[in-house]
Amino acid sequence: MSDITAPLTLSTTAPRKARPLPPPMVIFGLLWLSLMLATALLADVISPYAYTALDLRNRLSPPIGMGGTWLHPLGTDELGRDVLARLIYSIRMSLLIAFGATLIGAVIGTTLGFLAAHFRGFVEQVVLALVDFSASLPFLILALSVLAFFGNSMVLFICLLGFHAWERYARIARGLAISASGQGYAAAVRQLGASPWRIYGRHVLPNIASTLIVSMTLAFPEIILLESGLSFLGLGVQPPATSLGSMVGYGREYLTRAPWILLAPAFTIILTTLSVSLLGDWLRDRLDPTLR
Amino acid sequence: MMRFLASRLLRAAITIIMVVTFAFVVLRLSGDPAQIIMGADAPPEAVDAFRTAWGLDQPVWLQYFHYFGAIFQGDLGRSMRDGRDAIVLVTERIPATLALTIPALIIKLGLGIPAGITAALHRNSFIDRAVMLLAVAGFTVPSFVLGLLLVLVFAVQLGWLPSGGQESWRHAILPIITMGVGGAAVLARFTRSAMLEVLGQPYIRTASAKGVPWHAVVWGHALPNAAIPTVTIVGFMVGSLIAGAVVVESVFSWPGVGRLLVVAVANRDLAVVQCILLLVAATMVTANLVVDLLYGLLDPRLRNQPKRAAA
Image 1 (cartoon, helix red, strand yellow):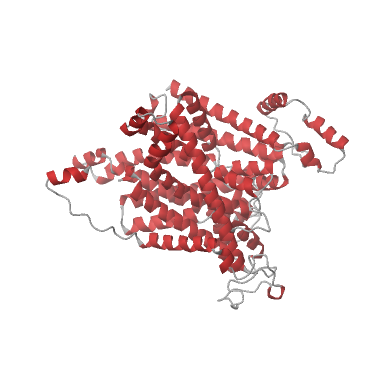
Image 2 (spheres, chains in turn cyan, red):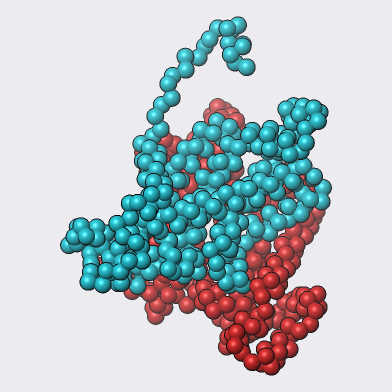
């Protein structure tokens, strides 16, 4: 719109400048996350050893800087397994779970939110009651009870984490979809005879996507923390598979003798969640129209 | 006000019923509890006897009604491992958990709220940036990592404090700090954004413009309004006094409810898990109810509104 009206009025604003670079912390976050993604994708190529490979002659050997050698740059654990190799595969596992679970949560939540907005009435009340239910319990407790009742498997674990934060997407999607249907464009395509699928999929969703994406960047580090917390407690990813949390849990046994087993995954978790949070805050400031 | 109260009470009751139903459904979906407890190679007669003893041979709907009835009589079943009442097993752990979570809550409030307010009042200053960076760091470091790092420094390297157990008050220091720091970070972030939102409102400008001194604007106009959203998150923290210590208790081998829950989950001691689930839900729902009532007191606009403003 502004393109059409601009020539008619005297321009009082300065010409648009080139976009400023994001703040250094955000750039750092982006770089770290790219490194993590590359590590996860190329795990098989860059890993120096298989993550289950034993080197019994070099058990509990320290990392470089603490008297170690380049043979095992981050040291080895009690069984002589290379910490760097385990770290690389743990990053892959943790990111895979976090991506999968975030997507599941966003899809479930958005779908239920749209259903509530479309049908209103009884369906809406049911969805809202479910939202209240899951907002009223700490998710960790819910997850622990499901794990107690069903036992553990990889698929169940990812789906379970997928239920984290679904109620937030549902709330956002419902609220925005209701206000969207009050606006002209949704009513216009409905008048043109578009099916609900088309209205919500092609018209409403793109309009509210930025808010949903911001929620996803907030949920992503929470899921990494949840996964690593559960795995740390021994109730998440089960051996021989390894994740950042289960590495910390294993390393805890060797806290006094070999702290490097624990420190490497611990700092990876911290830096990754920190990066996603910084990036998410920055994105929210840029994308969320309510904050301008 | 009565209508407001009634709708909130109804909501709380529905939530509790849903949690009970959830526990029942999940319990029954998870397979045959008798087989799980007795093991796969238990003799069939023993499994049948177990089923009769626990009422597992009745139709599902009847079990559901019995289940409801029993719960409202305070009978939450027995630990399937050692045969003691689950509720006794859980309640005797509560004091230990509260001994950690209440001091931690005080730290969260005492550190988080002033930090958030200070940061908001000095927006974009050095103080603001420093507080926010610390808050983001405190928020993103998982509690088990923070706890283990503290153990590494203060117990292993310096040898000042014990690394785990519950023998004296000194054992409680590290777990309390671990919990308090993370919560304070969350609260600081939240308080700051609530304050910033309020400070941008027209009535603040009006108050300043008519010559009200700045400290009076802050105390009289900004803080009461910023308190409303902050109460929500504090309510959530109070509600999780019992549940909030699962990970930290495990790190420091503290014998509280959280540690009991982890052990019960690992052993699949369903009665205990279920009892903790209901206990947590009850405290959470009560805390939410109190928060809603406080809302009514703090914000006169909400009293006359039967439905939530913008869900």
